[in-house]
Length: 335
Image (tube, rainbow, N blue to C red; front, side, top):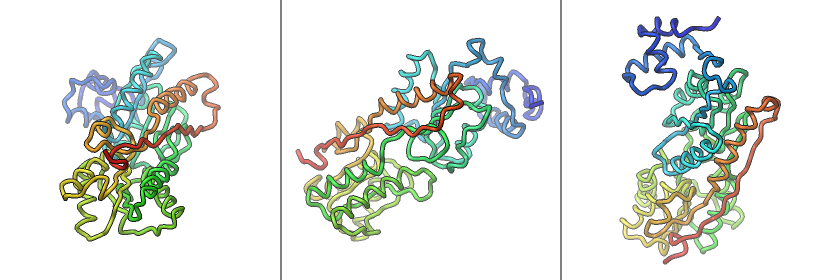
């Protein structure tokens, strides 16, 4: 017999009703109480009674989306597309943020929330592939981004995308192309794939890979891009172009370049990845790798729908690569 609501309530020192409110994610629970109940749920490995969740086909009609940062323009745009797609299937999308923290990712993947939803779409940053294995009794799982794992996976080809973006910068006659966005502290493979593509473009052009031009960042925000470009200048590293691993980094790098009196793109050409709305309206507008975000959302939801059929459990794990293209704008092409 597994733990019951009553067991959790006794462990946490709260009422059964409070435990139910936490399990069902009702908002009117004090943060410290919610944390205490969640610890008890995790310690007792409590799992809600799936049969009691809904009379409609034994399903809740809820789909979970787990992302590192809700405030990220890329994840915000993707969440909007997934919400609309879920509504078309009469599903409701629940969104959780992990801040790239391994424990939060694990709790959302393994904990009570995972048992409330019919399926999970997750973009992990911190968990290793071995931690992301779908198991019997857990909802279907779809991974986003370049994270390995024995589950359905939807992503662009980041190596090719980075090769194309870097190759475009080299094609402008730039020979000192910096790469901003390395994240060696994370298990997420996206940065590693984009670094591989960057290096491949340099090799194809006969340019050496210079470690001084490969800049790690703490996070993927505008301030990190600005700090990275300022760091290159402070270290006296010459560069005439920058490939940033996302658009937020690129926008920060452009701001730092302009603040230093550099002309974009005359003195330094800048390209990013994600095609967020901000980049289209920045001055200069941002050259970027544009993933087909609508296709990412569509395929992720279809993977869940397939897994929820009687034959879904027998399907092999699928890796779906969605299209992307290079959107050339003023940060490399000029005004």
